[in-house]
Image (tube, rainbow, N blue to C red):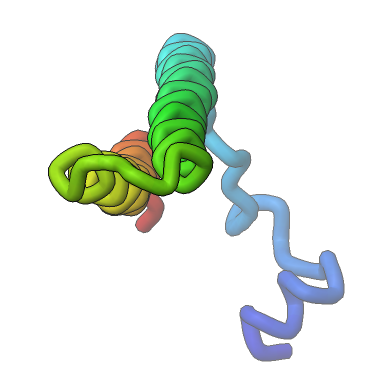
Length: 106
């Protein structure tokens, strides 16, 4: 029988079977890092939401006044744009960090 088929059918000789080697300390460290990344992601999302909300409130205040300075309007719009851009950049960076913590598989 072909080795791959034998393994799939669980008929491989015991000498060829290798147990999965695990390093508990490395796994715990990796899980700790992932938990820290998740906590950072939650905190960053909350901060971005807070900044975007403040910019939205500023824009609504300017609309209510009907006579607002263009500089304030532009600043509020820029704050929303920069917050959205930062959100994408930070999420990408956090995904890359999470990917970097994955174990090497051979």
